[in-house]
Image: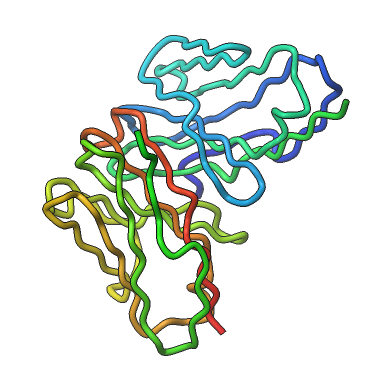
Length: 106
Length: 114
């Protein structure tokens, strides 16, 4: 059983579309992280959430602690957003989702 | 401010050998975590160090070990390498431990075991 489930696994969007990636988790956590990984391996931390909502540019992340669910939204998607997005939670250790591979087509 | 530096970037080793990977955190960060990423298992947590002490450990065999020095630089060691140890090994640094602060990742060390 995976402690963190992400959906969808793969996502293709047209440039400009609104994108949502979902993350559900089954363990008690103190924080949830959204990570972005580009080809070549480099990982960037996008958000760290313990409650509510955060916004950075065109990216918005929300978390519902009661429902153990988080979403990452990308508004006005752009080809440079193409990457793998990974949800990670900090419970008694770090658990990771399998990632969502996003491709944005011009 | 320099980012997280991992060395080497690429490494090829033979089964049965051992390997040491290095991670230099962002200046001022005292927490370093290590992760293994494989196509089959995705990202998995290896261990976390803070102030030279291992705070937490994932579900990996004892062949995987690590340490942290007084300057916060960390090394991880894998002994008796197996083919399945081929992976991208990532480290991340943060100001404090426990995953409640933003983490900054290095570019990773890609290890191939032949």
